[in-house]
Image 1: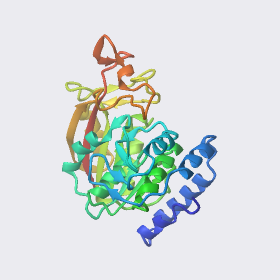
Image 2: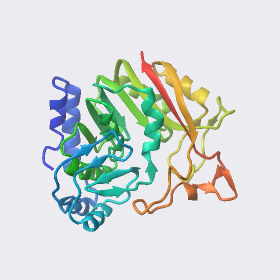
Image 3: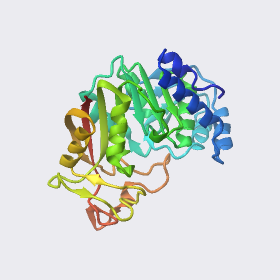
Image 4: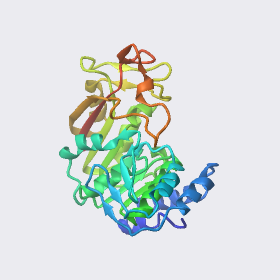
Length: 317
């Protein structure tokens, strides 16, 4: 895995910000202290050689030709549990992830044009959405996520698909280099409510875009009729730690516009269902079902409104 990210600079010649980013990601990966890294790297080394292949414009992206021993491959991929984003088909084995991320993508895709665009995906997980973005015509997708396991899952995908222009870097948004990046589009999905200061996060997203660039923001919101309210949980929300604030849609739109965006539009507001987020053999921990009040499905176990997620698209001034 030496010099894994050096190709980034080749995808965007002359961009000093990208060069700094690739150097930073390389250093982080090579010096990461996570104790499970040797086990995960061993799983990657056990992946079977198969002819490379990539069919990306599908709800379940197909990567690699079928492996000769699917049971052995399934066991190897299971060593990278839990798989949160998908579904994916790797070497003929279908990874049924916790999230039906294809449903979220289906709500977003009709409203954006990524052809020829350079995209940054904040909190990208294993790079599932990056694959879908490439399938929609994106020129380059750079995903950042501090969870090193997701980088290992991305490397498993890369093993079967080859060196696509979809990268997952082991960094958080706060670790990105200072200065101007100039992306055509920035995605921030499932991140805003984990930020102590939403205004700072939104301003940071604006700074990563070129003027006229597109923000795709997906986040928790309050139910209809509470547009101007703000929920600040005193403890957990739907069993999640670090949920700092959930706004109504009206308040969220004002936050976005105050951060330097215009033409902000909600393209979807939907309650999260147990069909979209659930436990599977590929994610065996508790999921949405256990986060809802068993006696009142409109509430979380803490008594808050059940999760509703909105997708807002805006243009950078």
